[in-house]
Image (cartoon, rainbow, N blue to C red; front, side, top):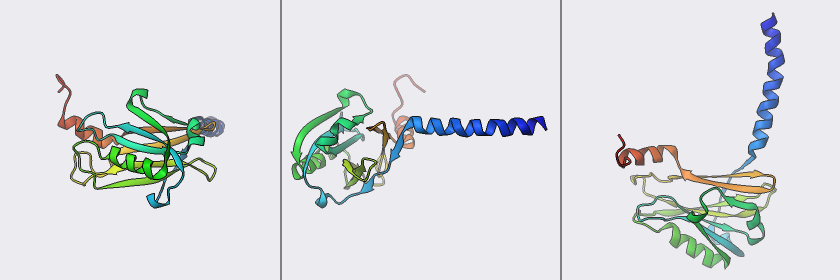
Length: 176
């Protein structure tokens, strides 16, 4: 009986803690497929990756200049560059060229609209798609967006299974 009472007392506490933890992490923003032909206006072009010829981690983001202050890439500052105030067609052309860098064949581009959490648009992500037989698979990048206190944080990394597969292929020097 005491055990049941203890569980009934702890359950609301658990629910409150889970709710607070969820709020502390922010709100996940879900991207939506976009047609590049409908992208107009002026954008800041963020290019990430393409550090060496065999790099699978490259992405481009077209961010609305007025909303650029609310976007933060959660990667080292030296791993991305920003070109400001480009017309949409020029930004898309440069993004296309950038994500095709390196020795991997890009079969197509994946273009998604990035929402701002209030029915608006922050910008667009442009990611490469590779052939299914490529080392990293079709879509090796895991890109997610979290909105917290008016700030959107962009997290970019390889999918864990891709990272594991690449680490097995090319183990670190001296590692087993």
